[in-house]
Image (cartoon, rainbow, N blue to C red):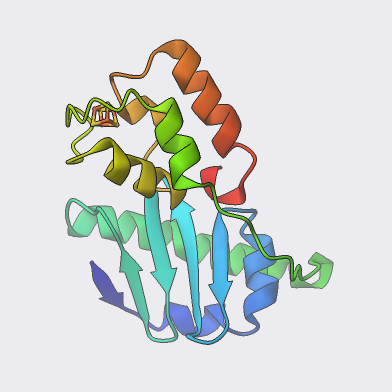
Length: 154
Ligand code: SF4
């Protein structure tokens, strides 16, 4: 879903300060420019004049996310004197490392066509280990531990 909103304009004044304030799970691409972050298992990408959100059921779901986003932006703006920009490049989880932990039965119970697709989505910060019913407690723990090393998995 793509929402046109003036909110995104505020995000890029200045982008690094806002990104620092969002507390992890974000990636800033200065060339585009765009800022991608994770919220409730969804990926949200902010462009200068648009916001794209994946996996939104309906308009009320999108509006709830926009309200949250607006609050994040305004809170970050208020805290800007205390924020330190970070220019570290965030590492992403490796799809194959995730796949190794999954049952690899391609049963589709997670709603994805294959375990590889599920692993790819997890590496992007979409979905959670609990979304795979075939994963036992040990596997869930292993996956959470692995994803926990990266900002995007938080
Ligand atoms: S539910 Fe788990 S085992 Fe089944 S396809 Fe999805 S990731 Fe693979």
